[in-house]
Length: 81
Image (cartoon, rainbow, N blue to C red; front, side, top):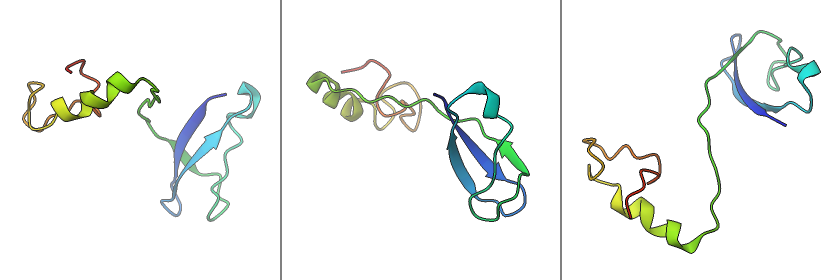
């Protein structure tokens, strides 16, 4: 079941919709103003990791150690540890 992020073009509210099937992809209504004028946003992928070794990834990717001036490693997922 995919979760999509939308932005209402009438009131600028951002919200997420869990689509339980592909048949209701066009049935999107803003929870704030109930408008059906929405734009699908490009969302980033997020995953949860329950491995204790992954805790050190975030510390090694700050301050540009990944080759980017600002770190830019998306929560340490560059593979450095």
